[in-house]
Length: 363
Image 1 (cartoon, rainbow, N blue to C red):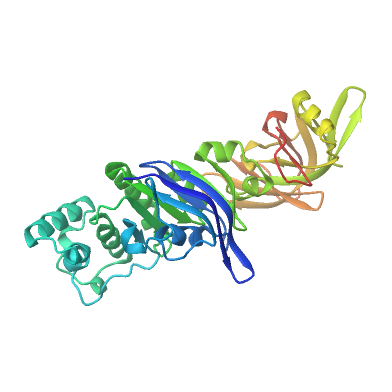
Image 2: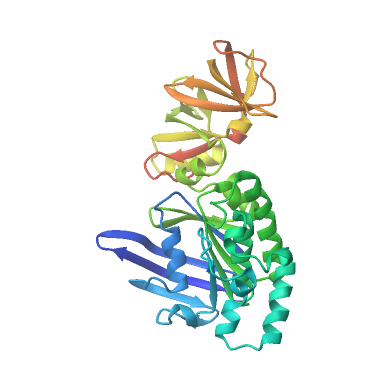
């Protein structure tokens, strides 16, 4: 096991900056998820740690060792990819044993370790089969077994569950988390799926356009997004946004949304006024909005009309059109129909205010 440190890492491909001055500390035994949309630099970051790419600037440490010049085979990391990369002509047993055979380990020790890891991953009955005889989930577990058997310092996983069907992904998420906690091996996991990130990670590093936007525990990332990108990327459905102007009337500071006024707490108002912020973006999560027939005193109430109603099983997703934008609301029941005139109502404490210019959270 080892901690992984990235210090001011930059990687360019021609004129494209794929990874831009990234610094990140992954603790010993931690499950760190790199989360972001396609093309954000998360896979390139993983490949830099593995040694499959070389950084143009910065330093990479595994343990206390600077590994910039070390080839992949000497970094003591094991990678698991989206594609399982199993040898089709070999049985499962030999696929798992292959890294140990390369080390010249004795047959007895190889046999012991293969059977041990196969039992851990619940694939003991598959050892005599070939990859073509396995399901996608079984193949992925074999690929994991081959990585685990090496007993590396670090696991690097690049979207390993994306080829599996939805039901199997749910099962494998839990299995991977259980295994990682059991093995206590530092793990860096790449995904674009926020549900995977939120359910599996000890901490998440949210990436966009080659930069880390925020690092934190899942709950922290969700409750306290530091900028507009993180706020809009985390959450399903994502946070609702509406633009507004900061106004002052006497000792009262508020955001004028056009359709409503949002009072600003005193400590936030002082930061807004001191920073000369005039234009802001107000955010509110779909689950923090109530649909009511009459305004609720002490809350922000916006008169609107039901636009679309989507059944989602145990809950309903209801769309409203406000200031030419679609607002989504999660509801436990569908008491309202398309065309109904209602109010959406929410508490000031559930509102996020972002500087429109810098896109940073004002708190």
